[in-house]
Amino acid sequence: MNKIIKWSGIVLGAIVLLIYTFNIDYIFKGVRTIYFTGNNTAFISDYEYFDNREIITSNPKPWSLHKQYNTVKESEKLKKLNEERKTKSFLVIKNDSILFEKYYDGHTQNDISNSFSVAKSIVTSMMGKAIMEGKIKGLDQPVSDFFEEYKDGIAAELTVGDLASMSSGMKWNEKYYSVINITSESYFTNDLRSVILRQEIENKPGQSFRYSSGDTQLLAMVIEKATGTNISDYLTEKFWEPMGAERSALWQIDSEEYGMEKAYCCIAATARDFARFGKLYINKGQWGEKEILDSSFVELSLKPVFDDSPFYGYGWWLYEYNGKRVFTMNGHRGQFVISFPDDNIIIVRQGDYNMKGRVSNQSGDLYNYIAEGYKLATAIE
Image (cartoon, rainbow, N blue to C red; front, side):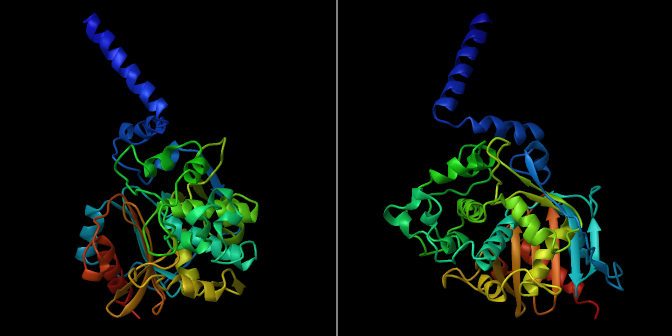
């Protein structure tokens, strides 16, 4: 028994030594946060296990309720989908009024939930604002203007627009169910800036779409440098408060010491407040009498950047449903903000599970939320 204990200790010590030797000690935090809580990937309430920065609202302006609020019932298909997929919030807004909302498993309209990659669309909106204010010169401005790490070789060709369109050519492996990989490291590291800046640009930038959380993170770091403030405060000042968000939100940061937001994900907010970005883009950057984003930037964001990737613009996913134009904000585990600009309809879904598929061939949960949400919204005038 003593030998077993002795050798177990030696093996464990060797493993720990290897982990620190190869600079992957972040896995301790990952195992503790994910596996010890009964999960196998990041989850919608995991912000409770990380440091956060607050996105403050001081002038809330609640959505109006539709005159037929919650009188239209969800279809049996939608009801079953929400139950099976562990939906927490399902919200339908029509003509700027809440037509339908339902919450599950004790979740309420005031509860916040991790957005995951829904945040990517918000970061590109912040880039648009920084361009509008002249703090970023434009989509063609070289990233090397902000970070000298990108001054040499093909990295010197990298532009702000390449980051927003997911075409940086950065070495990146997007995985969510493995502890040892760059995506997990960026999620659990205490120093996110250094993790991103050591990623090589291995392919010529601006050539093709390749989904990469690293692109959005580097874009946020550019915005941070350009504006001279952290991106939570920039979001608060330029979007959250002017749009009258009902609740303050949280944005996960890597650590109190380094204070960098996980910009590719991890804004925890309510369904009602995420819906405001759908409205902002439907209204082409206008919020009441206030111009928050330049309309030409909004229109450009909602067009494909590459012909062979017609489903992605600058930070937004682009689809079509029954001849209707649709743009969406999508996040891990099925976080969706779905907008029908021609009908002024916004659908928000927050939850724990998502079955992937393709809207183009009418498969997967996103397609079903688009279809069933639209049917519900158009069941009345």
